[in-house]
Length: 424
Ligand code: NAD
Image 1 (cartoon, rainbow, N blue to C red):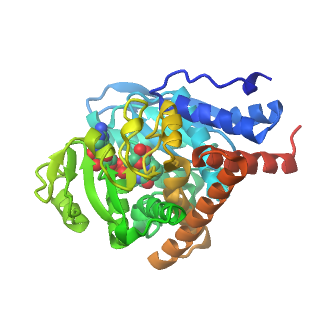
Image 2 (cartoon, protein in one colour; image 1 turned 60 degrees about the horizontal axis):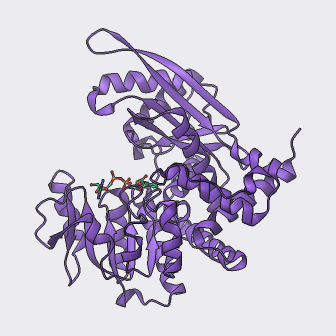
Image 3 (cartoon, protein in one colour; image 1 turned 120 degrees about the vertical axis):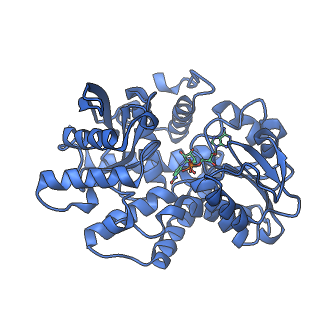
């Protein structure tokens, strides 16, 4: 069978190829049939649209938009919309599959999808972006729907774009349909707790990992790469639970303090300093590369893909890695991390707190009710802890690292469901 051959990694620096190679390895371990392998691999619907938009100078420019629905076996598909000059259908296809496995790992009743428009949002006015988002929504009117496909923000989009999408969809349907999209502003039916959700899930996974390694949080040191939404909240919540965060970083470099960084103070600094740590005085300056190899117990890469590579993996001193970012470890670094006995909690599990609270947003919209932050946090903590335990158990049962175990849990869930539902 073709897929039983070791999966070639086409491009070791490409996180999407890395993801596919891990999917293949998990499929082999699980021993699924070749038929099932292709059912799981091929997206069930791909839509490409041309979007003519009147620009501010009066010219008409045509943008290409995509939506790939990878799977709807577990429920309506879920996934973000990316505005980026380099986005293309292949990237969107791979990211849609990634969403299927992420939702399945945390056991929420969603399939995976992803959308994108090839555009440069930094060079466009708010008016141009609004017309583009509204045109895309109309073009996808028969794709989106609270029971069919539920978009969310991704690179280059945020609550503002989701509000436009909800408004345009609602106008077309003749009624307000909040549940068609998540990541909305709070007043439009967004959920409390969504902002911190991904960082919070990282914290839950880190504490669960520490328990497995018998590390006392009060005696554990940590380095966090990236101080944006995921990294800053993860650092703050870990700090609140006793972990000493020795280093943080952003695009401007790393910041190290052997006595521990005051995370609240750093967050206030970034808020005032145009979202940047540049000039932060509470620490000495190091590089992002140095941060990864510091002498700490816990490492949280929460900035970008492919930062842990076969070049630096052997120098990592942490005992536990919790992946806040998507794809921070290249597939070629995996064997090195594993041979060093490092427990690596993979992205599809560790950063799934965000999609979990997006699911809660959809649930609240459908209930016509608002949960307190406390309820959102309690329920998402439970989902994240249960998912961690399930993946850990699978890693013991199949004798594989947690990364492959996470794909095993996800593939098993989707393929079992498919078998019960049946096909043609
Ligand atoms: P963000 O834009 O809020 O923050 C990114 C941070 O990383 C910033 O501090 C930025 O300065 C820093 N950074 C960027 N490039 C860097 C580099 N080369 N070296 C060091 N630092 C760098 O983004 P975010 O929402 O926190 O997302 C971070 C990662 O987490 C991404 O991989 C994203 O896909 C993933 N993720 C985010 C969410 C979410 O809910 N926000 C959910 C799942 C996964």
